[in-house]
Image (tube, one colour):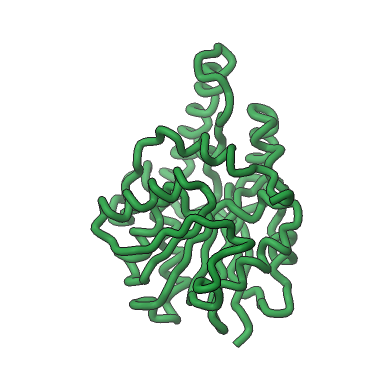
Length: 269
């Protein structure tokens, strides 16, 4: 996978030894769960016209996924996951098992997957996958192959073209360098393929500095400790903004401060 800026070894290291996360629960309305509640609103609106119960959903890049049980429990999807990290896949299986949710997790490269997965799903979703590939459009084309005609492709990436990207470059350049920075227009353009129609693409959330990370840096070093304190301060700043939004109304997402870009495209019938 010469196209892959991150690589399997990077992800295997990320998932090794991680504690298993709990599935997303939108009923928890505290500030620590603010982002997940907002994503729940986004998904609820996205799925309101397709009657998701018993439909098939595939998460590509599903390692250590706390979203797969959520899509089953909250919407009734039959869920599957695909990832090339054996370690990450095994963690996802354990998370599904702990949640009492049935689902299949396949360990394979999504550019050369089992043929049984092709054209099989009503929804294909990725969280932070396509921006790691130099040829982003071919990556999205590969993802579209899993969809049934009329199916939805939901692509969620970090907004590395705004303040998040600038800060990540400052505190952890190697992590910034495994991303292809895309703005909203760029991500939408990557989805404009003959078999896909972009339904919507835009910035999501007003702020969330918690997406910044220090992966790969020496946790014992003074440098890491100083940067970690800095990130905690920024995260608390985000929580202050969310508290304000909870009381006075939400700020409009924008390129400078929004942490995510969400794109929804539909495969031709």
